[in-house]
Length: 592
Image 1 (cartoon, rainbow, N blue to C red):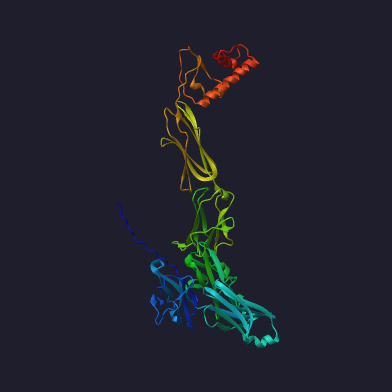
Image 2 (image 1 turned 180 degrees about the vertical axis):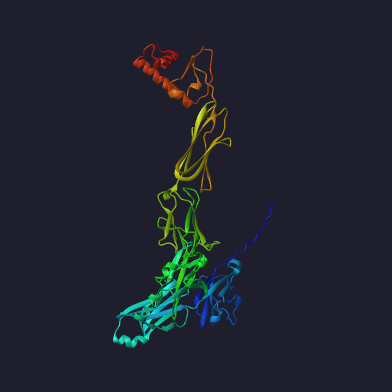
C-alpha cells in the first residue's frame, strides 16, 4: 500500500534597503536637520535611529513609512541637531535594523568637519586677483562663489572632493578701489541651510611679497609605498638674514612631524625637511614609503618673527589594481566561469565590467570590495557562460576603472577555442614494438599536462607551457589486449580530456600461408621496407603471424609493384634490387 507524505514550504521575500544621508557633512556650531533616507526595503518592519557614540539621540520622531509602487517601503528619519566644537570627535551615525541586512544592522557614519575657507584678493600692479577656496573636509557637493555685493562674479561646483576653489583676475579702477570692501567669498554645502560667507582680505602684493607662504599643490596624489614631496614655499622678509630667524615645521592632526630650528633639521625616519633647499625658500616635506595610514591633511607653518604663514596640503594615497583573468582558456561547448579579479587597490571605489565585444555581460552583481590587512582592497566579478561556435571570433575582456588609473585598464580573455586530443595508432599489434603518439592541439595552452596510461598506469607524462600543441610519444610492446588511454589536464579548466585508442585492442590473428612462403613479422619494420625476408618452406608447413587486414593489403601491393617492375623493365641475374620480385613471381608460379 502506497503512503502519501505532505510537506509545507514557506517562501519569504526580503528587499535590501538603500541608505544615504543628507547632508553628508555636518559643520560644528551650526544647527542642521539630519536626514537618514532608507528606501525600497521589504518587509515593512524596520528600525532607524540616529546614534552618538553608539547611544541613541533623544527625542527622535516616529517614522512615517510609505509604500512604493513595487510593494516595497521607504522612509526618512529627520533629526534637528546642534553639534558643538568640543564634540567634534564624537561619532554620529544613522543605524538601520532590518531582517534583510547582514547581521540585521547597518550604520552609515556622518562626517563632522570644520571646513577651512581661504579668501583673499592680491593687488599686483594694475591687476587684482581674487581667490576663494574651501578644504579640510570631504565634500560630496559644494559650491564656491566670488561675489561683489549681491552680484556673482565667478563660481565653481565640486563633487566628491577635498578641495574646491574659484578665482578671478581683473583690472583695477577707481570704482574698484571704492568697492573693494564689498567683495565676498560664499561657500554653499549640500544639505546645509545657509551658506558660509566671508569678506575677502585685501593684500598688496608689493608688501606681502616680503613674506609669503604658499603651496603649488593643495592636494597631492602618491602611489602606495612610494616617497612623496608635499610642496611648501616661503619668501623671506629679509633674504640677507638667511634662516637665522626662520622656523619652518610640519604638523598632522596637531602632532609635530619635523621642523628646522637652531640651524638643524629635527626629523624622523618617516618625515623630514630638505635642509639644502631651505635657503632657497623650499620647506617641502619628504614622506618616505607612504602607507594608507599616512593619507590626510598636512600643515606647513613658517615663522619669521614677527611674521608667520600657513598652508595645508592634502595627501591622497592610491594603489593601482592588479588584474587577473581566469580561466586561462575559454573552451567551446563547456561551462566556463569567466572571472576578473582586481587586487591590492585603494581607495575602495572600483568599477569592474565583463564585456563580449562592446556588449556588457551580466555578472553576479556589483563587486563588493574586501579589505586587506594593509588597507587595500580586493574585488571580483564573475560570469558563467557556455560559448558556442558563434563565439569563436568574438572577444571577451574585462574593463577596470579606478582612481589610480589614468584610463580604464582593459585585459582580454584568451579566444574561444576547441581543444582536440588524438591518439595514434588506433590498433596495436601483439608482440610488436610500436610508437604510440598522443597529441593535444586546438588552443593556446598556458600550462598543460599530457600523459599516456596503460591499464590505468602512467607510462609517460609531459608538461607543456605556452604552446599551441603538446605531443608525447612512447615505444610500447603488448603481449595481450590492454587499455591504452591518452589524458590531458589543462590549467584553469575543471575537466580532463581523455581519448581511448578506439578501438583500443590488440588484434590476434593466425594466417595459414597460401604458398611456400611466410612473411617474417620481425622484418616488417626494417629500413625503408627493403630488407623484408621471405622464407621458403614445404607445402605441408605453415607459419603463424599477427597482422591486420590493412597490413596484408599494403604488403601485397608492394610486392605486386616490384613484380611489375621485374617484368616490364627486366633485371640482370645478379641484380639484388630485383631479388624480391623474382621470389614473388616464383611463389605464385609466374615465369620470368
